[in-house]
Image (cartoon, rainbow, N blue to C red; front, side):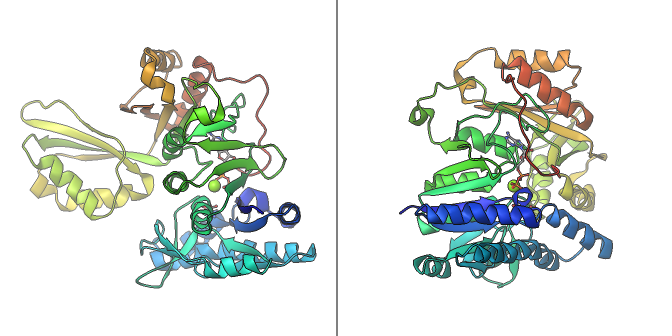
Length: 419
Ligand code: ADP
Ligand code: ASP
Ligand code: MG
């Protein structure tokens, strides 16, 4: 008997009819002889609607209360899904993240899982029941407050449970057929890949391909959890994430995908004195308020001063500016400019390592598409640029075509608003 963890995303459980359809899939998996544990997201766009509601009540809600509100979305879906399964004659029991043993640190809105103690889930499985766990949430080990894992975090709940239960497979059910060479909502000619390496999936997830939560991929790689992304609307096999493509007997393509990320902002600190320790002061100020930076560029200095530009999550831009302003005299910079209209476009492929000319094609393609490049960063298997938000889709499409990734047919998006 196999132990399967199945995670259903918001668009797969958007309404009563979808919940009944998913319930049937779950019961079928159990009747086929598997032990099934389910992780479920909030229905449709519920999380965004709860965030909108909080904004209407308070411009800056306390993080503890915001987390408590958001976890209500997953509580609703876990209970109704358990009801639908029960109607099909199987036994389902719903559990909040806390009841399922998802123990996190105390950072509201971006908590990390530090332990998983799934005693009640294992007991339910042993008794032949189907545990339904609310995704995206846990309980802080020290404060005992309810936390959330960050947007898209239900994927990580599923992998963490799969690791703790020693499951045979963790299946992420979503509204597209698997991992594609680009977001099918942006590039209709995107190609679904049967296999992708963890290494490439990590780069794609870290740079805007929200089909998998970044920490879910990190966790699966570290704990060796077999991970598959597939559609809840068809029986297609989807995409298996693998350590190495030899496992899949596939030849390594040069490029595996293109992604865009619209969630970052850019801040430029001008006229920073060009002395040892000044950059350290800037970045210590940002670290102290818990801001995660992405790209960093420092200009060549002229007349003993220099400009430093960095990108960070848009949601942190205001507090970063405030913190820097407070230490303005100490650092002695000129001005601060915040730009919210940027996008990051990335090209990912392990084959880049051994193929010359990838950068040349990349920048020539952007030039011909009229896309202006504002910042550049690379890893061994990725090239990213910052450009204007309204150039991003054109850049992604042009790169997808230039690197020969376009498929014949059109990719299907089964549901969801893409919000
Ligand atoms: P769920 O609600 O099931 O968690 P998400 O919206 O979080 O679904 O993730 C699925 C979406 O990810 C797809 O509908 C698609 O628009 C988007 N996406 C972005 N990049 C990719 C990619 N490379 N492959 C597949 N989907 C992608
Ligand atoms: N409901 C949460 C969100 O929308 C978590 C998830 O869907 O994974 O971000
Ligand atoms: Mg998701």
